[in-house]
Image (cartoon, rainbow, N blue to C red):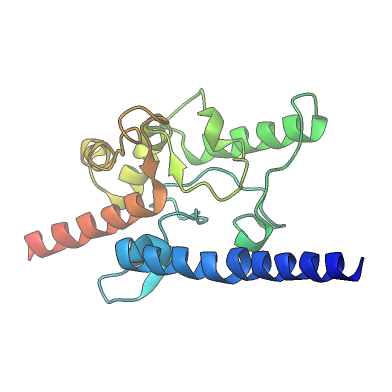
Length: 199
């Protein structure tokens, strides 16, 4: 009996070392060598070298001159990466219907030139609450507001959306999408380019 316990403890210790220490270190090391940017969070930096966020984690944008992301139920104010999760409200939930109705009314007020219908993904949350992407259609729906706020033509903003569309993964998985943070960075770069061109 005692020998069986000793063998079981040795197996447990070896398994713990292999799966809890050796394997994570090997995988982390390989990731750092082959995919260092992704392994470190796909961080994005400004032109001044300041980290402004991750391409993998959505952020809240409320300024009318920027594309707005999906709604978020992650944390009390949304977009809290430490509280990732959906609202867990079902389709028969009155609270969900009221929230969607309120968000629809607010979006139509903020985007008077876009008109109904409001894209579903702008009034519903993702499962994580941190989705960094929108469909191209949801981004294009916001173009009139952004063009008006930035005093540029809608065609120019629409062209930025279309040039930032990411295709399906491996050509077959998922749907075409745009990363909201990358798209907003492209808007700012376009503004700087336009300013330099008018000098």
